[in-house]
Length: 116
Length: 114
Image (tube, rainbow over the protein chains, first blue to last red):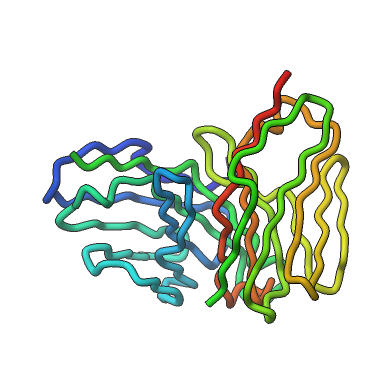
């Protein structure tokens, strides 16, 4: 199936731990994103990569570090987890920039992070 | 930066009735306005979008209208069905060409009452 897939779907961990969420897309898209959705359902962009290059970096604590080994993968590593990091994290991808429709996002199913 | 406000935050309608969700945006340079539907346990999915050179766009039971002067746009769902129950997000961007970020509204939880 062509899709954006992210793992794990659920992640429960203690404060202070370090964790990673992986994302892969097989749509041939050039741009990938991480979004955070809080308990009130607000969707906020965190990072955007185009062809492995960081193009959007919102005001996110530097405990969050994205890594893009190739344009089909964008992983999110979080250090020293805090209670406020609990949220659903969505990976998304979109077609190459410069063409109409490049802003159409395909989202993964989300990774629910719970920090205890 | 862009600020997108969305109303109402929750909406319940009887099956078969119409539902309307409204959004306003602040950046007069925004010219691309998509709507996403998020079903329970899933990621948001694009259902319809409109560009600023168009005032209205329709796709079967859903339609979107745009008023650039007033800086607001709306989603209209007619003949609602139980499967329309979801959270709906509007968004705005300066470009449909991928080099400008999307700013999402705060979401509307739509419940269709059978």
